[in-house]
Image (tube, rainbow, N blue to C red):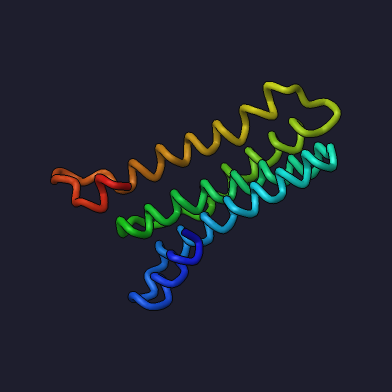
Length: 135
């Protein structure tokens, strides 16, 4: 999907939301590679980096949805939320972290970003288009 979205961005109008989604898919792939490396190395720090990739990837999904809908991207709000979640990830994967924290912060943040993306594409008083329903 990363390559497909990147090709679509390059050859079909260069719409920014497509680029954001391509980057999101790319970060998702990177997250799995980093996660595998962290598990093989038994390194909490490396697995924590994979969790950070989840935060960035899910943020880009919501940013792309806002772009596609013509809504302003509130970069400061995204940065603040990402920073707070990153601090949570750092604590979760530190020696002071608990297992519930490791499974909660990235998943919880991704869930919030999915809701933000859905809210951005929700039609204002109209019906969903076919791409909107699929999204």
